[in-house]
Length: 236
Image 1 (tube, rainbow, N blue to C red):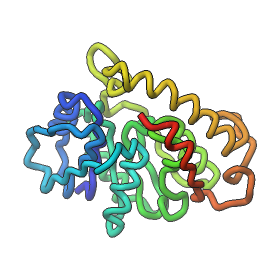
Image 2: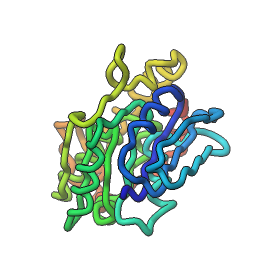
Image 3: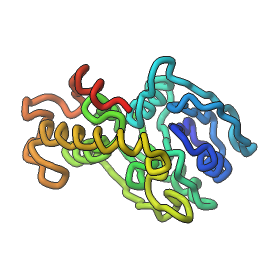
Image 4: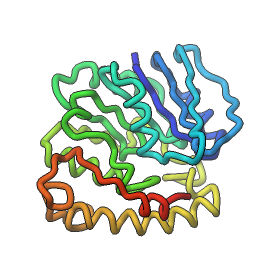
C-alpha cells in the first residue's frame, strides 16, 4: 500500500482527474494540496481509502512546500509519494514502485525527473526536506535535492518517465505552467531567481557545482536558510 500520495494542483483539473483515475494500487491517504484555490470536483477509484484536501489559507505554498507539507503532516509513515497533477501512471507501474520502496534497507528515493517521486524516512532524516526557501515555488529544487543525495551517497533510483506520461497528447512536460499565460510569465521571473540562488548555494549551476556544503559554510546537507525578501519576489 502507498501510505501517502500527494498531488499539488494549481490548474488543469482535467489532468488531475486523469492522474487520480490512473492510480491502480491501494493508497491509504490521497492528499491534494490545492494551490490554485480551485473548486475541486473529481471521481476517485476504490483503491483510494481516504482523500484529504488542503487549501493554503493565504497563498500557494509551491511544489516543494507541498511535498514538505505532506511529509511533516504524516511523520509516522515509512515513506511518501508525490506526483505533479499533469502526470499519469501507466497500468501496473505503481506496483513496482511500492515493491521497491517496501524492500529498501536504507535511504532511498525513486523518481521520474522529480515530477513524481517516492522517498523514505531514512532519506529525509539524512538529506532533509525540499529547500522551498531557496527554490520557490518550483524549479531547481529538484537539482538541489539530487545534488544533496549525491553528496550523501544515498540511493537515487531514476526511472525517467518509463512508467508515466508527463503532459498530454499535445504538449509534453509541465502543462500546468504552459496552460496559463500569467503563470508562465511568473515562472519566467522566478526561474531566473532560483537559478541565481542555486549558484549561490552550490558555487555553480547544476552539473558544475563547486561546494560540498550549503553556501560553502560547512552546514549539514539538510540546512536551509530563510529568505523573506527572496520568497516574496518569487511569489506567483
